[in-house]
Length: 312
Ligand code: SF4
Image (spheres, helix red, strand yellow):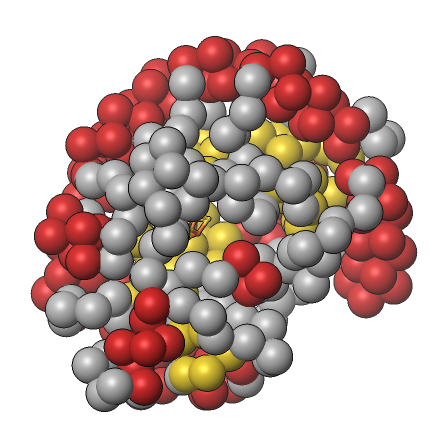
């Protein structure tokens, strides 16, 4: 899954597709740093409490961690991942500053000393100006929050990315998420009390949900306070329970039009100071089963932009 980041020096809009109608992450970084800042995805070999038995087994019904990264099974050392990522991103985007995005699995799921060592492997790179740490809301101790707040106090750009997906406990139970809204509420409150920026992930199209659910989930997240959002359609990927449900005809993925309309409407509903880190996403081509339209990321982004422009 890729994040569209924008920025350049001298400042200019780098994502002309969206940044004139959506407050994108790239635009926010450009305003803050005066140049491109790009997220660099890292797989630090974490696992997940919803897979190893401490919260549950089997994981979320839609999760295949190969969708996180091409190096999902045997990731190289963090330093090598940064070197490879920066080479590509420099060439493709001109970015000279990066945020290490700890993406795969639950990136706060280890002893504090281990976390510190992993995060600081990234922060010691001179062009890495911060961290974005993706995790579950029930997997973030106060020690970890204090550590991240300390990086923030040192001047690093720090984001905690919390996968909530839905604010409805019955939906979260249906997809075997292993946590509810209460854990999210506790973690987002504790994180923001420490001055940490929180980016919350929401999925549109979870089984049993409709547009009314997505609106309520967004409103709940906004009411609790949030600095950033990621939206994406639910992907059906190989080797998941959801893939079986889809093959049996028990799950119908969203159409592109349904997703575009809903995403545009949620974006409109969101205050302009909240930063959109992502408004769509796809999974790796070799595991994506449905919906196939989400693989055409720029088509989806253009459609969302058109929809927003039409209603502005
Ligand atoms: S919490 Fe994340 S990593 Fe764990 S099973 Fe669910 S989607 Fe996968």
